[in-house]
Amino acid sequence: MRIVTNSTSLSAYKVYLRLEKATNTYLSDKGYLKLDLPVLSPVLVPESYLEVFETDFGYMERKEKLYLTPSPELFIKRVLAHMKIDCYSLGKSFRNGEPDSSKHSPEFTMLEFYKLGVDYMGIADEVLGLLNSLSGGNKITYQGKDYSFGSWEKLTVEESFIKYAHIQKNELFSEDALKKHAVKRGYSVEGFTYEDIFSQIYAQEVEPHLGMNGKATMLYDYPKEFAALAKLNSDGKTAQRFEFYIGGIELGDCYTELTDPNEQKTRFEQEDKKRGLQGNTQHPVDWGFIDALKHGLPDCSGIAIGFERLAMIFADVTSIHDLRLIDVV
Image (cartoon, rainbow, N blue to C red; front, side):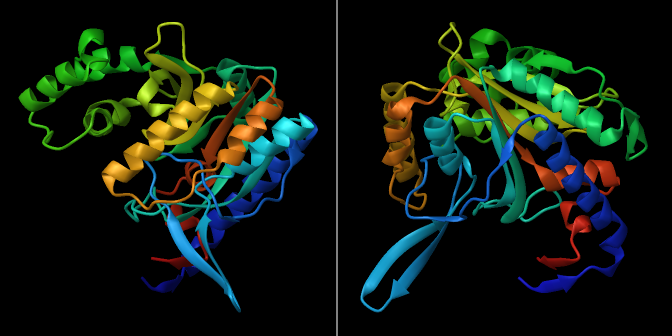
């Protein structure tokens, strides 16, 4: 990797700064408390689909492993449990093992906010309000296409797979059936998990169609395997999670938060086991997160938004790297 100075990024960077200021104003006016949070932690929430950065702290005889946080969630949940207040963070997060591309970077800016007393659909309303505020209620143009934010295009994950990948419900929620379908379509399945196969099909056949109809697409009710921290729906197969897209680009990920400490502990154990089987970096599990739930996490929902991706849309550039004056690539 090398350090690059991007003198041509100044105008896009100014859009980023304008959005940052407007976002802080919008959330503050709505009663959210802004949190200044650490980015290093001795423990993490286990998520099998994320790889992390590990580092060493040392002072004289004291030695300790620390990890760059892939999201601020483990800290925000403690605030929610102990202070019970709508709150948000807008700061750096870090993820390893992902491609350094136009939409990915090992270091990125994440907006994460939580609201008490609402489910994921309540957060969807809040996000639409934020998008409208950032656009001034006007259309924006991204790569030659106009977008407005008066309403969502809404699709369940099941509906999207039927519509774009021609995969029916009985195939989507069965690992064996999905694998057979993937083999027929020429996908690699040897040694791959259900999550791997789902993700291949999703990325190739579903995602490019989302947020392409002049408004943001809200894709909701994901298989439970993709929502370790979300409440399940009554069908037992899907979780109360949505992602939203503009121009085929995933911008945000929302859950109705799981508040049951026993269920969360079970899922942590399952995710930690998956991490070991997949050869991911082994980090201590944040069991204090479970203690926070026991203290009493109120009913709430939260969303994580890739803020540079959002700014990329509003600045009408094709890469998050186009927003940065100084970049490491």
